[in-house]
Image 1 (tube, rainbow, N blue to C red):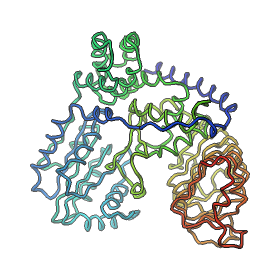
Image 2 (cartoon, helix red, strand yellow):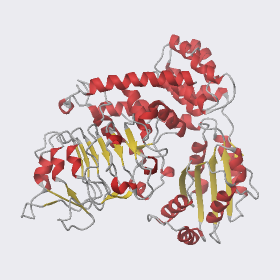
Image 3 (cartoon, rainbow, N blue to C red):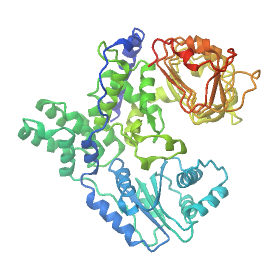
Image 4 (cartoon, helix red, strand yellow):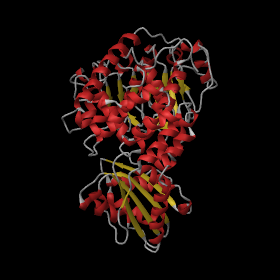
Length: 581
């Protein structure tokens, strides 16, 4: 497996070098190219494949929960290997009519166990108001009120915490309600964790592996097998491939989609691939999934590989906005130039392909984990399965390791990895050295809370193409932002505290459009949504001649500092931008 991953990394290095050569020559002139209609991004076969072979197990789980209906609280841990379909099963339970009259909560727990996060997520979804309590006692007080006298279904997806003491605290927090009925379904990979969850009368439920026949059925659906003329020859090979899917629905779906574009001799090559050798031991490990996913990955064209790998820069479970993601791909030069299709259209083509392979999928309403997601439509967002995310990260390797000099994509939600000091390191971000930024091409500060950037914080980011400050209460944007000559993507949405300098005494909900932004002559994407009162100078906006996307939704108005007439329309400032879509 190590040699296989090394080959993948060597190939990725070659792709990156090719990308650097071609991106410097790519022209942003696709706005005048032929326009075609978008194709649907989802397929019924994907949804059908997801639930094949699980109907009986779903009914069994629902029956178990019905039998415990007399208890005020029921915990049902479900467990099984990664990729077997635990989250899918939880979604089926979550959306079943049996719980139609229940208030429902879905929380993605992840490898980082956080009681406050789980508590606040539950409060937010039950009350409809965002909860950000930092005191556990306040969280418990709120939960006691919200859970008492009500019927509530809670899904805790992907639990990794092994310490019994922590799990007991979690149980205690969810037991606070009185006179109601609370059902808690937990998904985890480990049986030992499932056994540690409180179960007076309900035993942990082990999700059964898929049979080879079910894997073959999934492959047939994903590969459009029934429409093939050579079905007799393909079936013998296809059944052999199904046996190598490791009883995992995720692998069967990915391989099935890839086979759909192959001829008979290519099916034979897939079946005989040495990548399957990692499965010969018969012992399951994440390498089994990685080996299977590599078969699909290696069939991608170089640009699509780059776009897929970039998705690993987002944290596990993160909702990726489709349009934002495509604009980031474009800003980074990851989208192949075309004389026929615009970059946006090519980006949507990549999305459809990744959907087909099940490398990405739409989140469901049940996976809404934050207050902001109440404003979101799941079909406008993407998520990655944990195992696919792990595979993508193995492809990027040091390019997303912020402690590596080769880092190109940084997501600063955990700044302690980059800064040794524990004393508010973000207050003097990059003040002492610009070395960490010299190769950075994408920098995310999402959900960092109050963030103060030194005036020269970004001066070393000569290669920066994507800057995301969304949901950060940035008090002052650094002057050095004007030096980002390669910047093509800037997201300052949900920032409620940005000002240019102290000379402007603006209310905290306003945002100052910096004069320096006018020098960003390559900027294509600017998001100022949920800012209430953007304030700025007309010449700043009018100089952004390459701007293609401008989002000021949920803003109460736009105020121009040097125009005395209050009737001056913001439209007048953007109406002359030649590329705005």
